[in-house]
Image (cartoon, rainbow, N blue to C red; front, top):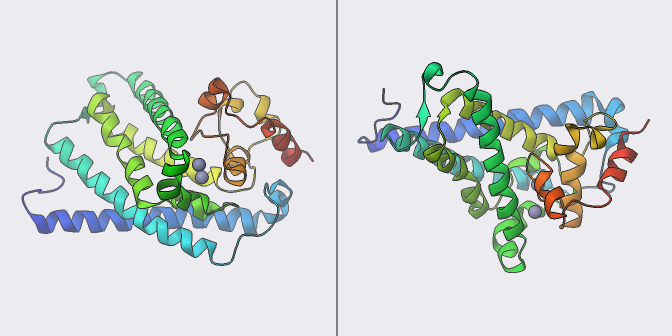
Amino acid sequence: MNLINFADSKAVLIAICTLTIIVFCRYVLMSGAFYLLFYYYFKNTFWHRKISEGLRPQGQAWSEIKWSAITSFIFALSGVGLVWLWQMGYTNIYTDFKKYGLLYLPFSLGFGLFIHETYYYWLHRWMHRPKIYRWIHKTHHDSIITSPWTSFSFHPMESILQAIVVPLIVIFLPMHYTVIMTMLVLMTVSATINHLDIEIYPKNTEKHWLGKWIIGATHHSMHHSKFIKNYGLYFTFWDKWMGTESADYEQLFRDRTKG
Ligand SMILES: [Zn+2]
Ligand SMILES: [Zn+2]
């Protein structure tokens, strides 16, 4: 089955435009829902868990939405590229659940997330080298106090470096297409939670046997406010292993979740 007819340039263009709109709408709906829920609807319940003090500069959200629109276009290009690789038989994407057994589904998801985490952690450390930082990563750090709108606000160069990871993974790792979609959903949800600047995970998560490995808003807000430490994406293990987790993280988490 061919999803896109790559011999027809008009069909390719329509696919890119449609996917750009889908990716951008997904961003607006997800970030908008989190913004409305935690900054208005649950404000009384969660406001004491606001991590950063001070105000965001005026117009920050609009600037983030503009960069996110460009990111959506780049992610759509990557998505269409992924379909091309698949149709050409260059990937290990499969459609039959029985091919590797049911247990392989969570394994491939976990392994895919591990590869993505490893790729992003080291890419992120590299992007913080002064010369690289200025022209690739500074756009994302222009948001010192983050909000859900920051989650896809990247310089196009950084978006490209992030967009190539899923196509690269599935060239080598067999993945069911629903596992890839689950991974994309997790990517969006975790990016939104991590930029919320309100800690939503329960008290004592920072010490919990599982919770301590998961990045949340406190962890990532500290990266945006201090520019150093806490480089991870979904998980804290690389930061813990490489000694790059902020020494104040657990204390700040406790402060924001008490009461
Ligand atoms: Zn950074
Ligand atoms: Zn960020």
